[in-house]
Length: 356
Image (cartoon, rainbow, N blue to C red; front, top):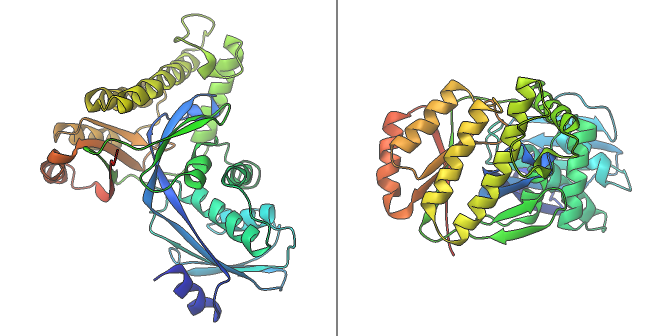
């Protein structure tokens, strides 16, 4: 059901604004976005569509097709810890008139998969609300506002990558983003490359404290090394950190940032072998230094590589969710058949074909 039809079914009238925002898969650069590093996310053909209209009742009525539920909220009320928080926080941040809104959310992004469904909802609601109030917002401002909602309302200490990717990119585009300066370049992958996204079968949650713990560890390591951001370092720290855990967290950040820059050059050269190698090394670093993978996720990545992928890695904040694989277009069907046999628990979600 489309978001417009869902809105009419739930609220009995037509929406006044409809906004689509894509999800994203991060090709490489994990947790570097709050450490001043580079990232390379790609926008998906899957995403979130928001249909909305003002209701002038000074309340929010938010319906989610994914949860088959309508939540009623006061504008600006406290976070509840439920699915409607992202839309409610977005309205509180974006609305100047604060007269109330009816919102219908339709999504083909799986919840808790690490594909930025939360960021997509927030950005879409911000854009829809500002459109309804005749005060449109730029894509960059929408991304910055969405990060503020995540950090200050939801309470997730995330970086800026997700919001920039879903707000700025069209499906199939990726970007090299400097998260410290917000300078970015749009990139289209080569025509003979295919990126496939599978859910590992391991559900994830970033609000259980582990994401925040990793950020705190990175901040402690940066203080110990006397830098503002770990990615300011040009080589892995060999001294200055006594704590073994902090050393490994710092090493992941420094090497991961280098891998992102190397991956960009590999994509420009259309060198799938080098790009895939960077993906593999990224996953190993997430597993061994940053410790955000799980044995089941590791097994799915290994199965993808064994089936013939040039590269594969977990994507997203960690502890479950999705993996992304790079495959030659001419080998894709054979790879997919072999991979589905060796990793039947991995659910295929989408493939993105290069076009450059």
